Amino acid sequence: MNLRPKIALYEPDIPQNAAAIIRTCACLGADLEIIEPCGFLFDDKRFKRVVMDYMDEKMIKFYKSSDEFFKSKKNERIILMTTKSSNPYTDFEFEKNDTLLFGRESAGVPEDIHKMIKYKLNIPMVNNKRSLNIATSVAIVLSENLRQTKFNNNE
Image (tube, rainbow, N blue to C red; front, side, top):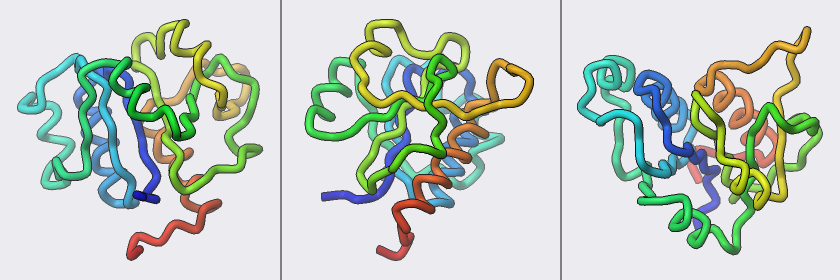
């Protein structure tokens, strides 16, 4: 069983953010899962400018739909990162095989997906700010997951 943390992006729509997340996953030892459709092509110049030489397709798994994604995860924990949660990520006990799901930058995840996921967390922000950039959010929560699970990139 793969014990690397996994970042899942639901229908990402901003190429620069997806590229920054790929770099973060490559540098911190996480796998990336992308639930299609994407709102851009991987040969987009904005994507290529940010991803540079960090693109390793072996670390990315693509799902043709959310149905395919959830069927493959039926025996795994999915943690939805959402501004609609009142549960801070710092109070959650992460496990090595968790999948951290992030919604579209423009719209999050649909309500039906929101309702089907048991674990929903947020990143607390001051003065009721709306949200952080998704790439920043991924780095914050992935770092906490790695800290808690004492993940070793050499495993």
